[in-house]
Image 1 (cartoon, each protein chain N blue to C red):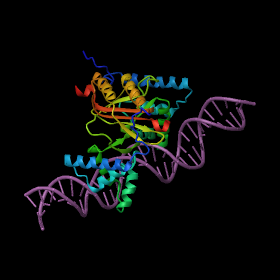
Image 2: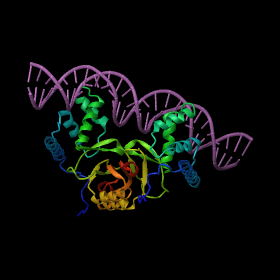
Image 3: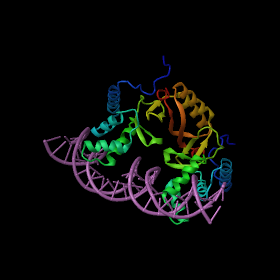
Length: 160
Length: 160
DNA sequence: GCTCGAATGTTATATGATAACGTTTCGCCT
DNA sequence: AGGCGAAACGTTATCATATAACATTCGAGC
């Protein structure tokens, strides 16, 4: 028995369902928030979700560009901006790349584990980390707005 | 009386001494570690320390380039790589910029507060945050190697 | 069907970083 | 001192990431 919580998706999980669920969450979110999940935006989100590895903007561009006869960078960046604003994807600063938001919203700001071996990224929830940071910033009189927390290393599956 | 620890340098601190101290720390460190703090490297470090705001590579390049008749990007990036490896500067991922290392070495991995108002960056030490992260990663079976922790917001001085 | 704003297309360019290869410098060894 | 080898630096070119600016199209609501 393995007691480790599976934050990194298991190799043989049903990834089609994973994508499907992400897209449905997105549809629902946009409907509720009155946001327009257009074809391009939906497609970019879907492409991002095709793996648990972060996607690079220009890789997305290449795919999109093939699909619709020559798209240019702004097409992709605008879709990414929308998805970021909507909280449907996150940007991994240390990789200049984008990953689908895996958590329900309003869970504090995202924290990521990045495996150097398999290149997968896991979004984690860690209230204790949040509260430790909150204590520290308030002690220093700093009003935090945005947190970038990215931890790279080796995931449990790659270590095994 | 102000009870807040001054992680953001006070407006009227003696910044010349600040730079001086940083350069002396660097000299000492390089002497001890048998690293070569060449003229370019030392100058880049000095430029980075001319403020507590992060420096962009191409801004450094412009200055260096004026000083020595046309330097090219690799000149600056090589110096930055050296300084990063030596632990004398840190890279702020969320800004694509570089800041002098303000702490003695071997203090765990750096964490930064970034003020959106005055653009200054403060390097902080927060053992509780480190240990909260350690608990969480070990719970998840993740072997952390590198941490990127950057918190942006409003510093105490700008809030006042 | 018209209109206004949002979304997208298009062209150009800014910004950030590295590859590849030649030349110089510097510590070290004899 | 002279020479060797590695490290540092110079130079040119190019790749990678991101945005500005303006034209065109689309789509919901009147």
